[in-house]
Image (cartoon, rainbow, N blue to C red; front, side):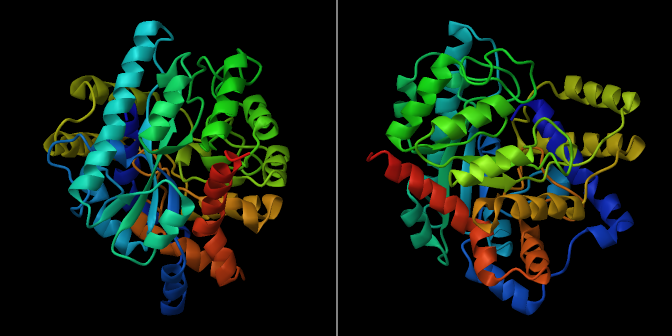
Length: 409
């Protein structure tokens, strides 16, 4: 997570308190005892935790309880327990950099450090976390004190043009990979950049085949519509959108149009609805705020290296937010995306990710302790316990299993 993402996370966290006070009706339902019992009975997972970006921060430990309003973090073990979270997909995120041999080498090394940090975290807290590589391993840990940890690579920029590195990261435990992030790379066009390859590049098509051969679940989040459609068509296994939204609800290039949602579902795939405000509502330009955040970015210079620096950054963003507030999406906005996706794709092809510790967070939904509200809202809409189980983990675990099974073919 670069400083820009840290600023987004901190801003989301700090504007939560005043927003909740002003929009109490949009902050989500308080679960009843019966609804909470349903939530605790299902396997509950999030398919995109950016929390590994915090693992190298001195003084921050996932085993400790933290406060989103103090340091901007949204996921830790105590809050996972409070939110009924059985596990999730922990992300090795690599920002797009120069498409040069040197840039690719630096990205590869950065990704190797991050995946090592995930293994170190799990080893250090072996009583609380366990890395898993199959759906069955994850299911076996449900309703135990341990939280399961899948590993994914967000952006395949670290591979450069060397797809043999996919097997290297597979052997290190990665079971989900996405080809691209916010800028184009050697493999694919991004949803938020001008088209270069017409979707996947020829190397990107080889990337799909190699993912299928290894049994890696393909994640099309951040890919252009053309690249997403091509991945759906080329893959011999269902694919996933680990954190995205519905374009019919809010027209943003990072969100997916209904025709692609239907094609994804027709091939057995799953769309996981995320909670990033900028993908859910229109935010008018605020030049003063932009300039103030740029000053904060310059003052802090890079990722917070210590917990004290993270808390100082959070306070600085809070000051900017108080002076130059912006509209923020609500829990109701999130539910609009989720319910629309269920209507278009069907209950067997939808799931959830908060995109926490990576910029996600809304009014009434800004950390993992808020997850039971979604269960309450679904049950109140008439969905069954079985439906809730599919949305919270069943569908995602199914496509992990399908990707693994496809390698045998």
